[in-house]
Image (cartoon, rainbow, N blue to C red; front, side):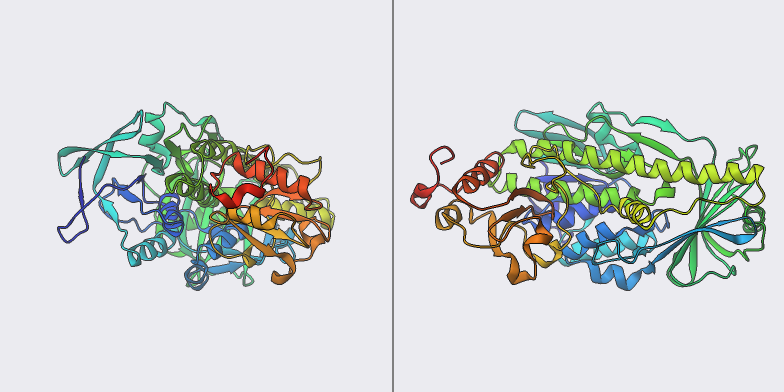
Length: 518
């Protein structure tokens, strides 16, 4: 079993969890594992961090996750806020507008910053905790063994092997972990070729606005970045098949042609060609190897959700892995990662596809109508669309970790006020007396904190409970169990639900637990 150095020549034991890839998914998975008490190891094939803009928009649901992880401050300090979204047509005429205020989140805005800065914030956080990315390590193979995973590495031309309990594959679209698992990204590639770039613009834009400008020849997405810069997406001409990137003057002319006005593009710092995809793997995990981020799914960037799905993948697997490693959960809990994130990632693909099709439909409309228009949507429809795009409507109903409930019940969704909770445990939020609480607490106190709902400013109606009810909130803020009334029967059902994936603390104090679940 290979040892590693801490950078000062002191050998360190191999990590229980090996993370392959140091993009947002891998770095945030490491951060969350660390918060839950597990120290992972991160290896990266690149020789140094990149300085590319790439994915920029952090959605409200992920800002909540960053808040819970203790990282929201650096992101808000480094980013710029997008509070309004505009669709503009020919002549820069407004076709539609949506405001994020009132979407049902503590963070009613998107936070935009270059991906290199996102990764730097996460690396700096990990470095303060003594975890650094090990660059220049090429993972050659990842083989599952009866009791773990054997990984072959190439370091400075020499080959080493190490054993790990689990591997998180966060290596992007060319993931070695995905290939080792025999998985493929299944789906489709959209027509067309596109350019993404980090530029400065002189085009007048109100503060806090993200825009998509459509015309008969295509579109330009314009998203604000810090320091008065902009991320743009623009479609290439159909006959533009060259490999060489456009010069600044060429890109400026293309953008101007798309919007029918002079955008004043200058100071081009970074650009890349890309294709848009709608793809996902059939399964995100196989017991000891798990896929996160672009290694598992690719969506149209017009939806602005790819990097956010990566963060949510990381948050989901981290708390589950930590519980298993610490002996507080059954290994079967890890099967729920593929189930839950598989559903959620498909939702991301669907939402991104809807946005992609909507934009391309407008472009087609501009080709036949010089003054296209949109039917106004109702406030309820706008709110639903914004919540979908903000990833606030993610639901895990149907997962083995979500107790079955009647139709239209909110169990499996996120608790809107979960930011009021603290720590890394499950929380049982009660709104009245809890019979059998002492026995329940003795059995589950190592994994479940009992909280009076009103003590955190939460009323029963907000939680979908009665004055004598309760809800179980998982470490990731999702509601896993709901009891309209917390009587003996509900306590028994809750105990059985927890015991289906967590390991209770065995002690004499558990004698009061119903025999069916004791």
